[in-house]
Image (cartoon, rainbow, N blue to C red; front, side, top):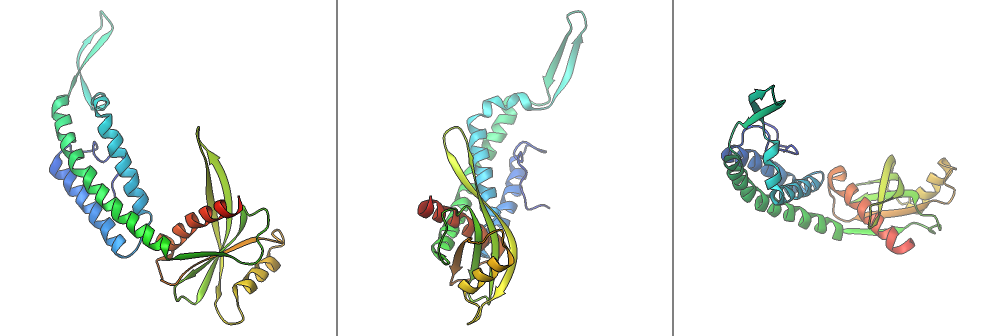
Length: 240
């Protein structure tokens, strides 16, 4: 059985509270196990997605009844009209869905708050500092990651982009893994930056930032995604 929930899991397949409860609890147990292993992504973002979907669905549930499967009851060729009948009465569907939503929304919210607490815990363990002089153009450069007592420094090229909706502008970050450097006495962060410059003449004076944690976290699921978001905020507040 899959440990994931589909986008429309509430209304897909059997509309039965006990069945949906079983699906939800299996999913939340899977998420909880990953949070216990300090793995934040993609589990936190999935929870937020499902929570927001269910809240919106609950608010608009009166509009949902027209989406359920129908079958033809009568074809009136004289008046060019087709009459349909619902396979199940709307009130029967909606009562069951209302029960599912009432159970699922608070359950997902609790787990979502657990994920946010884990996110905040990790974020508070991170330190960000520029390596060398930061140029005026800092929308592209290098991100160095130091993860606890790991002997390697992970290096990524980063690019900041701006996108906007009707009311706000947002900064997003894209990263591309380059390589790792073994940390040692002669291989300082400044030396790593110089080596990066030597091997990429397209960035002769790159913005370079170190994000480090004294505590080791899962790299792909936790440290890297949170470091990226923290770096966007750090650059936006300090250099824009």
